[in-house]
Image 1 (tube, one colour):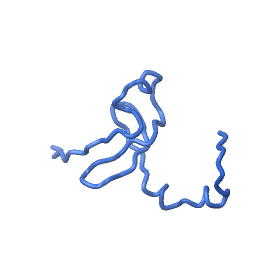
Image 2: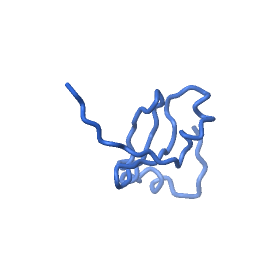
Image 3: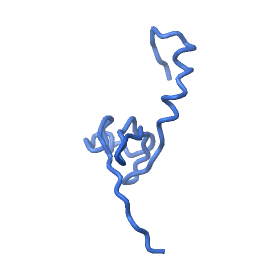
Image 4: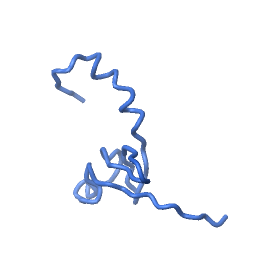
Length: 75
């Protein structure tokens, strides 16, 4: 992967607090990277593993909000 930027290399790779706020979840068979927000919500950052058709699905577009709802599990 090639990344062109005017930022110094040290500043680009030393952004640990941003990387720590990301997590990976699987939703509908799509593995994605999300940023956790307040009020049980997350914002999609990028798709990590999915079929090619999922890239065209507007529900999985970067920037979309996901809302988590608590569910009781019967074990």
